[in-house]
Every structure is written in structure tokens, then in C-alpha cells.
Length: 128
Image (cartoon, rainbow, N blue to C red; front, side, top):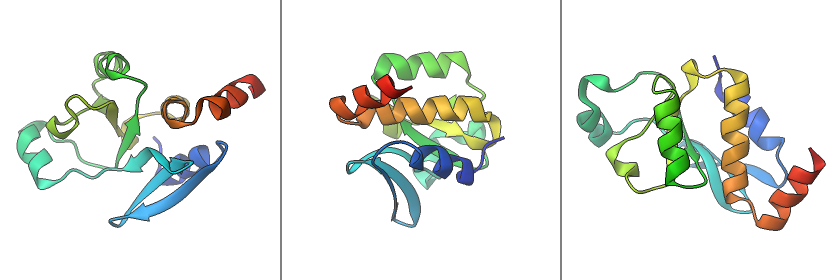
């Protein structure tokens, strides 16, 4: 089970990442571009999801493209989900209480790679 402390630790270990607060929620950015963020469900989300609306902390994460989003949704619907607000948008929602630390690390790094400038991403990948 992952926590917000885990999210912060993993995200801030990535090059040129900052943590900011917007509308009372934490956001992690690389060179000003958000890649993961706290994303509690809103009233419209709860209405759209109905009885399927999950409880617990929810992480929003950018993905490379819509195909990657669909793959995550199909791979583990107990961890990953989406809402109508994200239709056509390359982002996924993650139930923090359902993802292990290895999976969380992968989601955060992939989100960072999707938003980091190409040269910075290439340098990071070369250093691994």
C-alpha cells in the first residue's frame, strides 16, 4: 500500500522535480509541467461513477498517450481507473491504497518521462 509520502519521495528523486500546492492539493512538476497530483473525486465524478466510486487517496498521473492509458485500465482495473472528465486526455487515476511501491515507482517515472523535456528524459534514462 502506497502513501503520499511515497509519492513525494519517488517524485522528488527525479531530476528537476518540484512539489507545489494548488487548490489545497499537492502537485509534482518537472520544469513547470505537472506529471502527478493529488486528485480527490469531485461531486461530478461521484455522480458519474455512482456505486463504483472508490474510497481512499487518489493519485492523478500523466501517461505518454491514450493507448498507454487504455493498457493500464485493462491491465489492473482494481488499481487504475478514469472518469469522464479525463476522456480523451492522457492521464490515469490510481488508487494509492491498492498499488504496491514498485508499481507506484513505475507510474511516477513514466509520468515524469511523459512530461520532461526530451533532453532531460534522455539524460535520466542514460544514467539508469
